[in-house]
Amino acid sequence: MTVIAAIVQDGAAYMAADRQVANGWTTHESGPKIRMMGEAIVGLSGAMRAAAYLRQHEPLVSPVVGLTPEMVDGWAQGLADGLHNWLGARGHGKVDDTGKIQGVVLLVATRLGVWRIDSDGACLRILSGEWACGSGEDFAIGVLFATKGSLPGKRLRTACEAAIAHNMGCGGPVDVLTLAAP
Image (cartoon, rainbow, N blue to C red; front, side, top):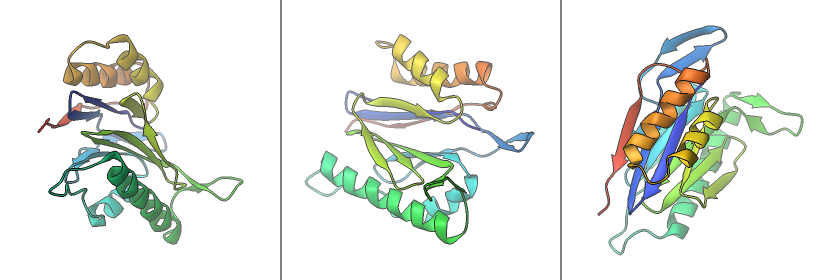
């Protein structure tokens, strides 16, 4: 159970997440669910064993000429495809009635936008530049909408704190990472 929220604003990327993990009815605090991967911040919601895949995946590296949204689309889709294959090969994740692996969501924030990656291989660029995932995502998205115009870090922290206050699957301290504007 998780809440991860991301914002891209004025050429900078921001992401925040809680630290609580659940195994059945047992919850405990984990390490950070968000990490820097080169020119991207990546948050992991769902099966935390997928963190092993993230440690193996190449970070997003900016070429000398600079990143384009299309370059990030390609890197993010590669991340999605690799995650899907990695989970499937290890028998991880729930398989729904269509045969798709469910249960893991990655949120990716770069200076160019926010992407949602699902364990079934789906990769979607979020056009609004802000989004959330995890069991507390509805609360977080509501706060992000209601706080437009405030500072990004404050908005993210408030979004995660709202999810922690109203969703028993979210908890612990909130981590915030920033990828500053160039």
